Image 1 (cartoon, rainbow, N blue to C red):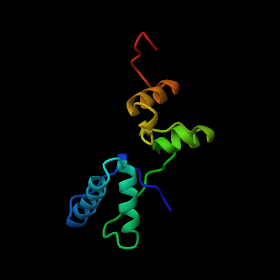
Image 2: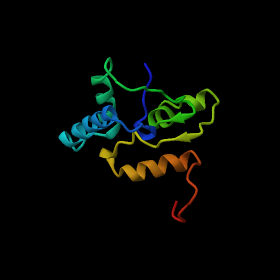
Image 3: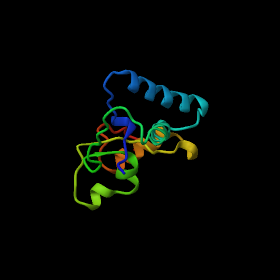
Length: 118
């Protein structure tokens, strides 16, 4: 089973796609603390056998989400440099989600603008 990265999702306009995204929005509205990726995954699971539109998944080693790149380090372990990395799966419960994302990018030399205080 392939993992769909909601940060890099493209849906062609259509009634089924609008209905699907309405389900994602409904799931988010019902739980404001819920992450968008989780709501997207839940909607995909709910529609698993009835998705009325084509779903293609980009290579997760080349188009990474935060879990694959920062936590599992799958492309690094395989010696692959991704084309792009979505800095998600950063839990802000221990502090600022934005601070966590900046830290991750800095540690991977992916942050292009440094403040003098770093």
